[in-house]
Length: 86
Ligand SMILES: [Zn+2]
Image (cartoon, rainbow, N blue to C red; front, side, top):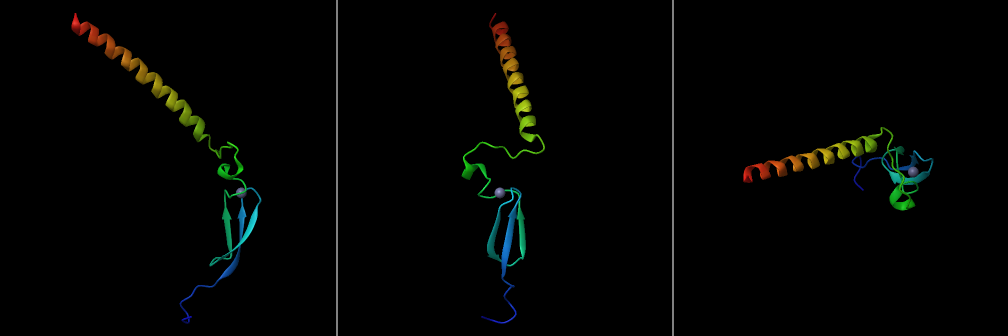
């Protein structure tokens, strides 16, 4: 190995928000993560949403509003077409 070009190698402790800890090799002494294989829905198989700010709910209400709007618009366009034909 060439001298003075390699970063220091640590036995890094990785701690997750769910409480799980792992030991890996890395160039930083400590890593904190919000989600890991012990708590991610892909691995657990549960549909737990990681939604702290209510963003999913907000999106759902916005989507519902938009669907209603487009439906009423389609109706208006249809009635306009009928008038033109007369
Ligand atoms: Zn975790």
